[in-house]
Length: 160
Image 1 (cartoon, one colour):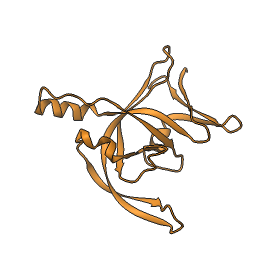
Image 2 (cartoon, helix red, strand yellow; image 1 turned 90 degrees about the vertical axis):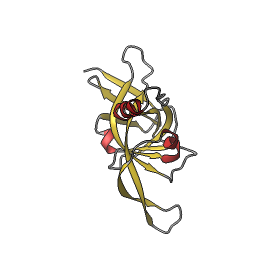
Image 3 (cartoon, one colour; image 1 turned 30 degrees about the horizontal axis):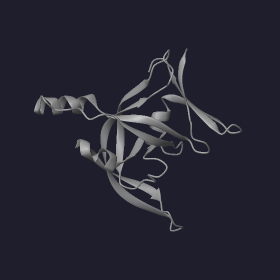
Image 4 (tube, one colour; image 1 turned 60 degrees about the horizontal axis):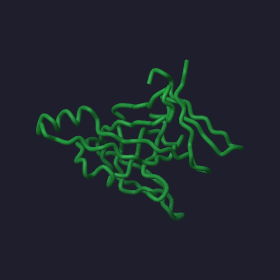
C-alpha cells in the first residue's frame, strides 16, 4: 500500500500547487474540428484546500478563458461577503478539467486525476490562491495536518 505524498511548502495555509489541464475529450473534439489544433499547456495554480467545501474544484475563470472551454450546468454558489454583510449568491458555469499533482519523487511518479467537474468563478482571492479544492477531490486522498509543525500532507493511494 504505497502512497504518493505531497507536502505543502506554504506555512499557515493549506495551499498546494498543482497543474490544471484540459480534458482529453475536449482536446479530441478540438482536434477533430482542426487537425492542427495546438493543445494548451497545463497551467500551474495555487489551490486552497477547503474541507468545508463539499464540491470538487472552484477555479478563477480568467485563467482558463483563453482555452475556450465548453461549459455546462449554470449553478448557484453561495459565498461569504468580504464585509460583515453576510452571504451572497453568484451563478457560475461548470466544465471538465484534469488535475496533475507533482510529487517530486521519481520513484512514485506524479498523480493525475482526470475529469474533475470544475466550477468557473469570477471572484477569487488571487493574491493567495486561484483555486479551491473541496471534498469531492479530497475523498480520493488522505489529508493530514500537523499543527505544531504548521505543515500538511496529501497522500494518494498507489492506484491513482
